[in-house]
Length: 256
Ligand SMILES: Nc1ncnc2c1ncn2[C@@H]1O[C@H](COP(=O)(O)OP(=O)(O)OP(=O)(O)O)[C@@H](O)[C@H]1O
Image (cartoon, rainbow, N blue to C red; front, side, top):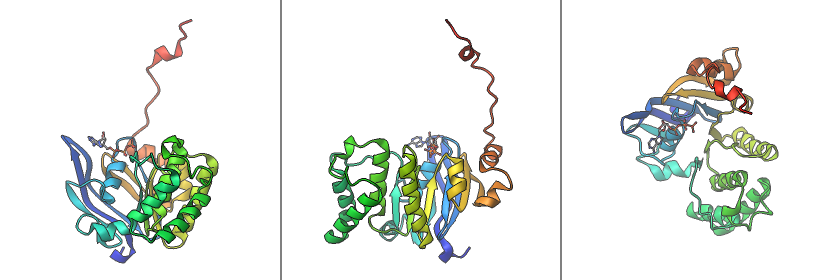
């Protein structure tokens, strides 16, 4: 793949927490226009990788490029092109939903009238119009996910990096979000998302990387990585996650 075809390029990305290597010389190329799923067991290093890729966590080694811009040496250019839905982000939750999205747009240096226009469009598209004047602290988990997504979209980024975008989101909202993301990718945008839901990744992603112990175990189009199996089976084969349900015998016996 040539550099122009790569939306997100990670090279030798490494992060240690004390003795533990969370991300271990990780290389990954996300093609432009792809819908790219990042999957892996709990603790595999997905969030740490995405945080380093988007300028939220400084790597110990390695580089991250967003559409050619180095995230760590040219952060202003890189960050202008990215919209991020981070995991467990602390929001200014004493703002209303509408105020929070407006704030995200103004922080990006956008014109106030354009911010107002896009905020209303996003509230409608994400079904948040009625909740727009409610404080974010009073939002449900799914509503919080949607308002954070609105903040990630307001400046019309070229690359969206979403940590578990469908977690806690109801089926109707999931369908809406999926529609917005598919439209975004169909028009030249690139989506990178992490998920534990293999069926979802199999259905909506064009490409996938399976990560375990901070390294890429398989990468390519979903069909290539599946290799004729379901993604779920391939995942379990690669990460060796199958455990037999022996033990916990006490759970099977009733005490009354
Ligand atoms: N700030 C931190 N300090 C210490 N260890 C950390 C920190 N952040 C992550 N880790 C460790 O790094 C490893 C990778 O964590 P990470 O959150 O990237 O995994 P993940 O693939 O996103 O997991 P999950 O699917 O459970 O969200 C884990 O072992 C985790 O305990």
